[in-house]
View (cartoon, rainbow, N blue to C red):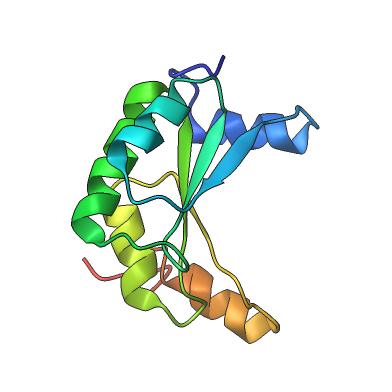
Length: 125
């Protein structure tokens, strides 16, 4: 079972140490399904907004349900140039984002910049 008190920093530390973490990609737009999965013992759930049918209201409810179930939440966004998707996912409470289609260091820097507030990044306040 996931530890609901586990901070995101500790989660990353465990990953770097090689501790296995089990999770699923969620393409359903159902907050109920997301919360049930979070209560099922998965360490993380990734809500796939790139391919799934959810809007920001549904995403908000899904992230809340995942947190209630004790799993870490991630959101797959549209790409490195999806500034609104990256920022909205983090604003709604996602523990992290998965940014597909990064092929260059400049694209990676652009995506990371969207996740950090000025003066380190360009995320809007």
